[in-house]
Length: 412
Image (cartoon, rainbow, N blue to C red):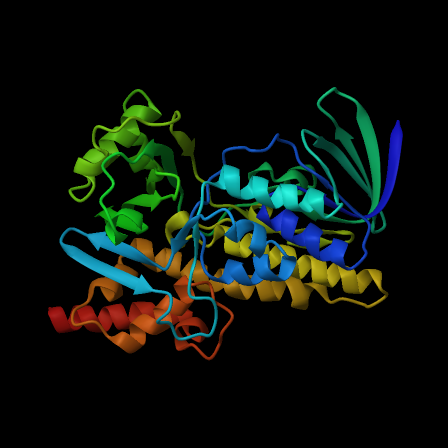
């Protein structure tokens, strides 16, 4: 069997894996990236948040991504019947980027992967990890290529950025139930033939159909738009008696007073994809010789588009810690990786939970608007969830429910 000897093996060539690979390569670490699929490939997570721009810039991907002219995302709109709440990322509490992109992930991820290859990084597509063994912190990973040939990769460290593939969580029995209630989604792309002119046609929107059920609308610069429905798994399953995803998504669109005319009779560009009970968690985010990044460790919910941000945050952080460790430093992975990531994930977990209780929606749609509160919430939605100067980060456990309670008391 062929054998390769490297410093770091990166599993997965999505945003998290590419950010890790680029950073390590720049620091003269010998790495290899293996990716199970062939790019371009369909994947969910098409709405980004500004925090990711810091990572794309630091990893050297910004020029190539910017040249693609993806639709700029300057904020986000939430709709509930006749009520509308718009967040503007340029008007937020924390310092940071005030825009990002809305992207067809097939194109977006492929650009990053091709940049990785241009950097001179060994990226192997259509190669599946089938076994991993650890000898102390050193690992031996067996991969199978598209011809069925087996190869052993000996590495000092593994970064698992395999996303929903969850390679190490499966092989090492690291999965654990999510703290969030079971939700599912169904989505597709449409040729947006009824797209309005101007800002209305390009604005990302979340249309609340019921407190726990909402429609996403993510317009792309290529004229297509991503449309998806999210809700409790029981509700999503009730949209079609025959478990037909086309029928289910069409029925969901019919429930939207705001979007039924724009999307009601429009053909779907591909069979709608269903993601069932998508929230994920793990028993631990690192071990002797490995780290889990992106969706391979935690995935919360698509409502605030946090997935890619956590993927690149954890990917960049893991790469920096590994680089230091390979140079002889002793790294406290519990404090520097797990506790750091969990603090940001904890903030967004609260916001997801309070979205589905309706408390956050109470704050969003309360009139008259409180500009100060809105700026602080906007910073969270932009991904700056480690800024403890922001009370809506520092006191996230209680601030939303307490403010919602006060508003409800005023209205009663």
